[in-house]
Image (cartoon, rainbow, N blue to C red):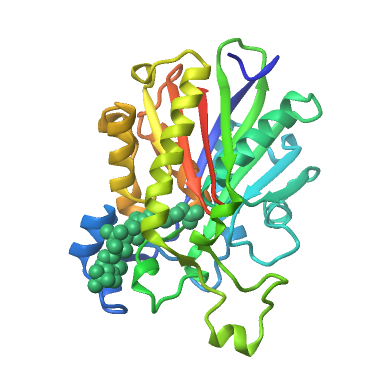
Length: 331
Ligand code: ACO
């Protein structure tokens, strides 16, 4: 099945991660943990942490500039900017508008969409659909996160899992047949929203001295429940998207999973019967970068030669909401 009348192709990708590396041993100096615990439970060795002057829009703008360069396009070619983030610089204006200004994109529709770690697949489907409507030519889509700003650095059960970074892609229309985006399978289940959330900062719990004392402005997670739900929804989304396109898992050249936990990805590999060597992994270096995780991995997979022209690639993610999604692309 083709996604629409004209092909939408990934014309370029880019990524950016802050220079500052925090290893598991560094974290063991802050909270009661160890490299051994973190690595065996998650596969993470280190993560990048942005400095005080570097916000989600700065990380996103750098990744986006790389993506524009790899696409061979200029800022004036972009007429749509969509950003996925749970750590916007501020509630408004949108991080997309901030990135537009930082890059000097003269004329574009700009918006943020929030679907946590599934965010990049959500914005990819939205951008692809808008391109196919014929009203836009080239979309810049960016997943960017400064998760270090919402982590409780006294909570060892969460602060060891996440990192900062950004990834981006340029999507464009193409008349070439049988290339580009094939299909999406997105989903959500708001009833399970309380397994992973941040209670403070919105209108329900605006910032007050009390909300700060109660640590409401930090990410909260029930890790075990998230783990089980993650495996279930990612397996389901991947199976359904393959079935509805008449494809078998052994036809996939590369799988780009959300980089949250190696054990989740290993379970997915065994349930989908896709060998681990088809999965692109970089979570050992970056931890979970939420909406930035898939586009950073996609960019690194291209640059490492793990995805070649014509390769059938599956991206699959889950995140707070709950949200989940799968995307099939002929790269
Ligand atoms: N260091 C040392 N010990 C720890 C740490 C730590 N960093 N964190 C927890 N522990 C302890 C716990 O206190 C507990 O101790 P106890 O038995 O004395 O109570 C013990 O380790 C086991 O804790 P569990 O939570 O049961 O450990 P588990 O094996 O389930 O691993 C983990 C926890 C890694 C969080 C796992 O559940 C997981 O990866 N879940 C999925 C999380 C995830 O992917 N989140 C991202 C969602 S995407 C998004 O939208 C942001």
